[in-house]
View 1 (spheres, helix red, strand yellow):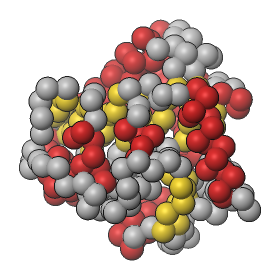
View 2: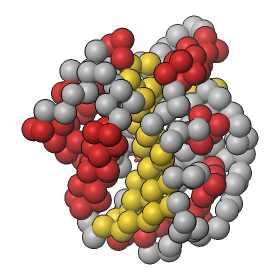
View 3: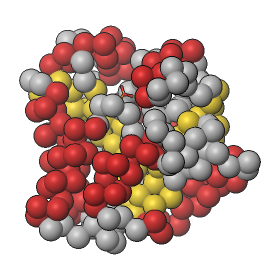
View 4: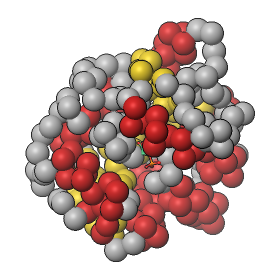
Length: 245
Ligand code: PGA
């Protein structure tokens, strides 16, 4: 990985990684209180978001002028569905921080008009962007959001058929034991247009894909590898996820 505008930080444990990530997000929020923020759902950032919310409240950071945009959503779900991306962010951040609904743009992936949902998100990013900070995880196939392998670099918001591995890993979020076969996601062009990108990965299960994504440029087979071309990218790992980089 190119060291120049990039950083890799390896924390000993998931708890340490979460503290580092929460601190990094907090610092950007403090410096850009009217910024636009795009925050991934998923299991990895859960603890960081709890710590972030606590710190924002403890330190009285004014978040009322910030705007938020959803990274992705499972097709067929909205914020009322357990396991949806929106439900996670509602629970961990939007609810605890009292973010007003008119400050949030999120895919309603239950809509009959999915192209319209994508247009809504594209317009929000065009109106209020660029994104000040995008917080990302990495899928087992290297996806960013639901940008699966092969996605073109310049994409805006779009619907994706999800690979088998994304669906099978995704069952962990749902009591039903199955995950939707499609997703809506902001595009790689919008992720790359963010002023800063931060990616968190935790656990030995992620070590292989982290190595493949970040030891050399493997885009577009490994979508996350595109972040090696991002001007300001931080990779935050715990020791278990970092064995290959
Ligand atoms: P996870 O998901 O944080 O639950 O591992 C990451 C992703 O699929 O992007």
